[in-house]
Image (tube, rainbow, N blue to C red; front, top):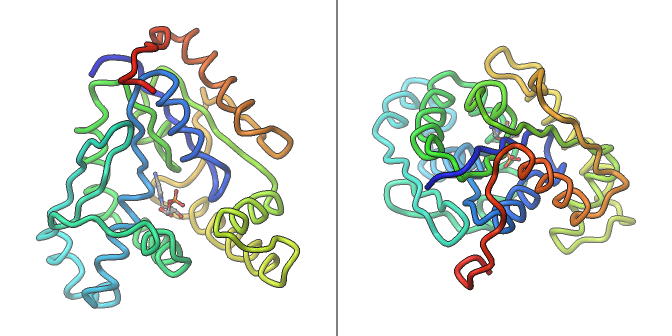
Length: 233
Ligand code: C5P
């Protein structure tokens, strides 16, 4: 697939993956969600009992068949030929464990390879924490999305069908902040904006406003105008 590469990084629940998917649909591109790879490894290693087994972790990871399969405008992550359900991948325990396994060099190398092989031809919007800095440092467009922790917690709770005015709110803020801190302070591929990234604060913006801005920037950077054929609906 031809086209430019749009890297979208930012902290947990800043709207990266929803934005990256919508931008991909508008441009006729495909969305590559790097967090799903870390979540899938965490899910599988939790399920099979090797996540906390240092002697087993490396060999089990090496044996793991990790592939991406294109489905419409998304890539599905397959672990040993199997895709985890969305509920399992978005569970708080999976998210917490994903940010731990994501600090391991062997896991990062593995994911880096899969992402590069999949995205190198362009025509992709890829979201994560280190996409513009490490995975695709030559990406034509790099975006770093931010939003206040309170706004991110509110969105995350609504996404899971909860009540943002309820007792879970402060626990969600705490858990997001804990994950951000770990992602930003790890020694390997920490979450930092690339020097040439454009930062967008989405706290006061609607999802459509964010997408419009990024699509406009992508068109400026050489993305072809949208193809309106039914295939892109
Ligand atoms: O983006 P998402 O919340 O699904 O990512 C889950 C975890 O995977 C993050 O907390 C982060 O630790 C890790 N991650 C990463 N680098 C990426 C994408 C995700 O370290 N490019």
